[in-house]
Image (cartoon, rainbow, N blue to C red; front, side, top):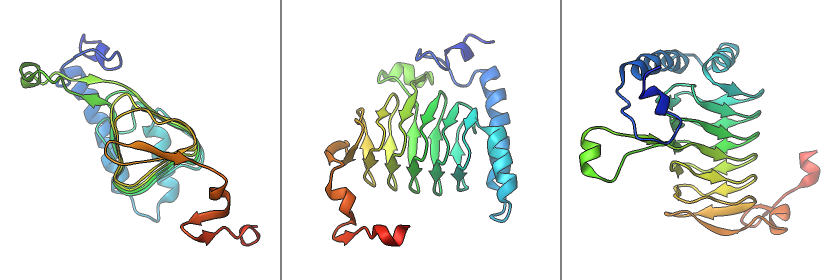
Amino acid sequence: MSKMKERLHTGELYLPGDDEIMAEQMQHLARQHAYNQTSPLEAEKRWAMLQEMFDEIGEGCYIEPPLHANFGGAHLHFGKGVYANFNLTLVNDTHIYVGDYTMFGPNVTIATAGHPILPQLREQAYQYNIPVHIGKNCWLGAGVIVLPGITIGDNSVIGAGSVVTKDIPAGVVAVGNPCRVLRAINEHDKEYYFKDRKIDYDALK
């Protein structure tokens, strides 16, 4: 294993253009390309491909093509029942962990990779990778961006268009750029699902 490849998951600075890294990355990207060419009528084929592509993926996951991940399914750990709408973008040079039943709206971006602030190092294309952890039963609205090293707690909702620059605790609604906690999920949410629209529990049975 090359010296640079050893640093993919350590958080250290490394050069992503290393020959060994690139050779492996191209193989993952080729499999992702094939997945993105599948027909909506090929549900069984898609599921079989996801199981082959991802490091871990639980039952009942649905990833709407196109999926854009710069290491394909490598370094991805999804629980069961995860749903991703169109254009999920994963800068997955290191690991991304997603809990059961979490949902991603269209055009969500989760990044593990960053570059140094110092221009001289960026000129040489140095990079570092920090893993991202997203809990169970979260909902990330359309266009959310999650930066390297972030943890989002279980059951939290991230409002559309938010940029998550700091950790978000469990059980909250958080919105904005930078994303901040708006409120806790509370008793009101047991009665109303959207503005003044009440949950009809009888109709859900």
